[in-house]
Length: 260
Image (tube, rainbow, N blue to C red; front, side, top):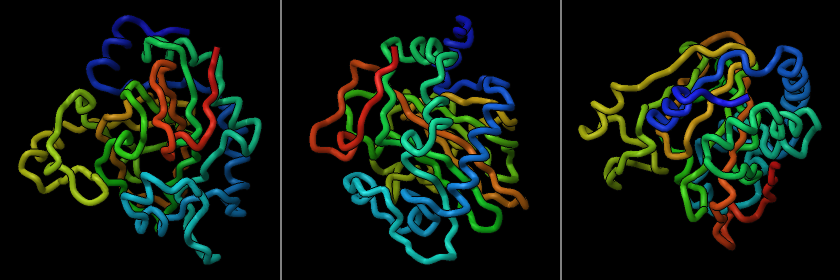
């Protein structure tokens, strides 16, 4: 399967692309079943909501231990990390052959999975989740280029109530000043330079099996989950083969998977 010319141009222009009903129900159910077991038993490595709120910018950039820093039993898991090596169903989706031609079109290069970043089951748990502020994923990653994109698979319904992704179109090609970002390099919502741009935000309700592909420099965010049910998604990151990881960085501490 390949993108049409219009679809490819849409991604290049806006920095993200929605593929409806891309993954069938059975595969989504297999992924979700395993994810729920790992979430129930809080199988490390995980990130909790407390971890997410307390980790410093330096921690996110430099530390390679992806285990939770919070050891209490009553915790809210924000994500299961390093899922490629957890179970064959996760690995199978990340190496899915149907999506490879699309990713190659977008990257205009051979496709490489980077296990250092994302490679996660993402959650927004009811009552226990927090808002994800506007940010660019690329800010903590150490590479000599920006040709990286993330692949987001909805494993259930995602909407404004439970924390669907929101994007600022075209922001992956914009140049920003340091002053437009605050603590932990989040895009400041109160900065006058940012307000009109934030008003252009876009989001789409997602159903199980929908896939969103978005650029590593695209500004995006999500609300907390205000519904009664968990929102569970799968996200992994790829790069073009010509993009090199910087030596001795956190990004260099994990394997890369080259896809034919």
